[in-house]
Length: 453
Image (cartoon, rainbow, N blue to C red; front, side, top):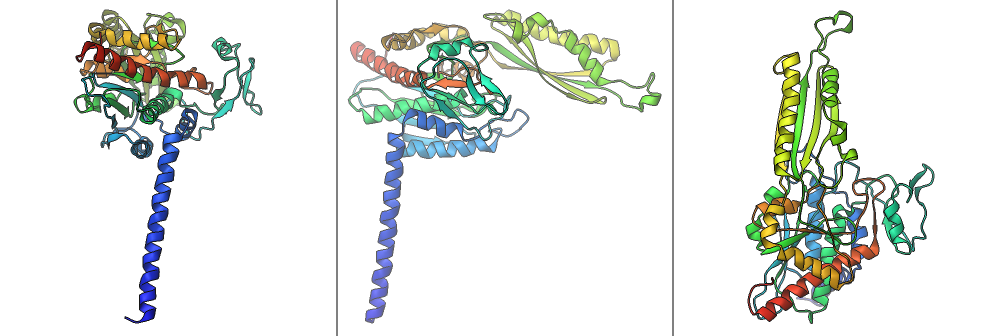
C-alpha cells in the first residue's frame, strides 16, 4: 500500500471516530437535558404535541398522533434512566424505577393518559405563562376579546401571586392529562437524582384514549405488575378521589324518509323533528348544567342529521348503580315510545356501558386512599376528598384487579379554551407522588413485611 492509500485510510478512520464522538456527545447532551429538565418545561413541551383522541375511530389508539407522542415519551424515559421501558402496539407505555432497598415493599404504580379531549381542538396549542398573576382578567386573545375572568371562574382568585399556564383562547391547554404525565416523569427524575431517598419498585404507565373510555380495556394490568396504583388525573390542588360515576353511552339513530317537500304530505318522515321530540323527553333538570354532587344526569353530546337520518348521542351518568340502571331503562323507554308512535324501527338504539363506580373496588383497600391523604397532609396540602363527576381510567383498572384511586394534577376548566394550571399546583402533585413512595417504603421497613396499613 502506498503512502497516499495509507493516508486515505487514516483520514477515513479519523472521520468515523470523529462522527462517533459527535454522536456520543449528542446522546450525552440529550440525556443531560432530559434529566435536568424542569417540570414546567416538560409540560410545555408535551402540550404542544397534538394527541386528541377520535371517538369515531376504530383503531387502537384512536389517532396515530397519540402513538407519535408515546414514541417520543418512550425515548425520554430511556434517556432518563428508567428500566424495562416498553411500548406495545395498543399504545401502552410502561417503565420501572427499580427498588433501592433490600426489604420487600409493595409495588406502586402511577398512571396518566396521553390523549386530550375530542370536545375541543388540541392542535397548535400555544401555551404561555401568566407570571405572578395579580388578580383580575387574563386576556387570552385581545383581538377577539377572549378573556379568562374571575367573574366567570372565581376560583382563579385563589392563585393570586402564582405563575399560571394558560392558552391563547383558541385551543384547550391539555392539562388533562399532560400535567399528570409531566408530574410523574418529574417525580421519577427527582428520585433518580436523589438515591438517598429509599423506595421500592415503582411502575409508571401511560396509555391512550382515556377521554373516549376505550384505552383502559387494552391495558395489561398483570404485565404492569403493581399492587395498587394512582391515576394522576384529577383537577385542582388537593383533589383525592375514589368514587366515580357509573357511565353508559347511547347512540340513537332516527330513520326518516325524504321526498320532495311539494308532495311530502303523508309521505315524508322528517328525522330531525322526531329527534327533537326525543330530546324534549329528557328532563332539563337532570342535565349536567343543573346537577352537582351525587346527582346523575343525561347529557346530549352531539346531534348530526338531515331529513333522511339523524344520529343523536347521549351519555348517561350516576354514582348510584341502581339509579344508573334505571336511567338506562328510561332512555330505552324514550325510544320505545317514539317507535310506538311512528312505527317500529323508526328509531334504533345502541346502548353500552363504559365504566363503573370504582368505590366498590377501593373500599376494601381504603388504606391506599389514606396513604395519599397522609402524603398531602405532610406536605401542607389539605386533601379534598369528593366524588368524581366523571370518570378516570382508574375505574376500569380497579375492576380489572388494580385498585387505583385518583390524585390531582392541578388543572382547572378542563377540555376548553379557558383551561389553565398554576405551576405551584403541578409542583405539589410531583411532590405528593414522591411522598406516597416515601411513606410506603418507611412503613414497609417498620413492619418488616409487605404491608402499609
